Length: 488
Ligand code: NAD
Image (cartoon, rainbow, N blue to C red; front, side, top):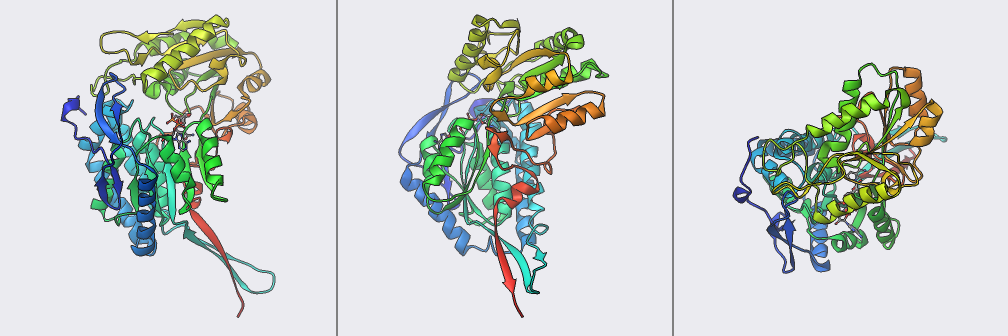
């Protein structure tokens, strides 16, 4: 998609409740990550407005035909929504790009189609997943029936605003629920356009609602007694707060997709070093490393370490920084000046602790590009350093070397995170040993990252989360299971 002028983009800066755009009195300025300029003001919800959104959702769940209409018809409506989203790329992609870290080319070619296809994927479960008939001990007819929860609260992060939201709302709505979504206060607008298109597609007003605001609004959603389940994507720290808030209203189920510190294990039997280098570089520079599954720890066997790292450095220097509205930009900005400061702080402290910067290690200061961080490689690091231990959420790759498979596994083991891992080897036996022993919710072998694999669940072990997004598990997590026993 061509470059665009940010001034030409219509910003739907509202809540969206009961099928209508609604504004509230308290507002905050929203900044463009590319240059830190305020480009719109955002209405912030208070507890009463959260209550209004949840009540609208509840009424729509009870009174519209959404939950009771035939699953096939619900699927058709969801598919119509997906088609409208795809056809709206010229509106949605600039809206996504202007206020987020997604360059326009990536937004148009990946985020918008991926969001639409995710909705289409989940719609197909509507009439293909349900209860089962179960043999019983005494000849009764035993079965399970699945039912929607009612109103599901969805809380989303800023790093892929549309895609992350769609992974929450698509399974929830396909299963017959109403949803109250709170996007990140840093990237709040594109989901409002999604809500407008939902109405156009024939989804009843009130089934999909958006409330705007920061963590206080998220907490009000979690604590609301009419919210039956919360699905969250964000940091591990906030995930713990969400569990605590949900526990205030009893036993409210949660799905938590949280942070990670994912290792990439590269063995010296790989056939094509250039191909693997591209994979490793892509896994830490996509969205400037602001990805939950960023491959942020490279563990490489000694014999090929220098060659691999040199090639990754060359690939880093090919990245083109520039505002997200320029179609030549391939390196994303960092979401905010505060985050940029934090990332640089981690890198500088690592150097003080004995780490070395091989490439990068500073902000890009060229005119108008102060929001970018140079893709960085840190060496001479270990798990006692925060750069290796903590999620940096920036384009910073920590490199460690190993000699044996056991060493690789030992280095890979993280004390608290277990989101994903990559294994790069030509030896299938070795790969399967790594798959079995790595503590990670997803292990990619000879590839890294999720392209269009909606059917494969995603979700972490340990501090990286509870439950799954995507796949059948994600769909089923949006339904209650009722057991029925009938005697004749
Ligand atoms: P964050 O935890 O700061 O915020 C996420 C959302 O939670 C935002 O909408 C925020 O307003 C809201 N929130 C903040 N405090 C809250 C509270 N007390 N109660 C309820 N809601 C609250 O995360 P972020 O900075 O937006 O996103 C980056 C994080 O998300 C990273 O840690 C990343 O790894 C993680 N993430 C995980 C996945 C995954 O699938 N595992 C995907 C994307 C991002």
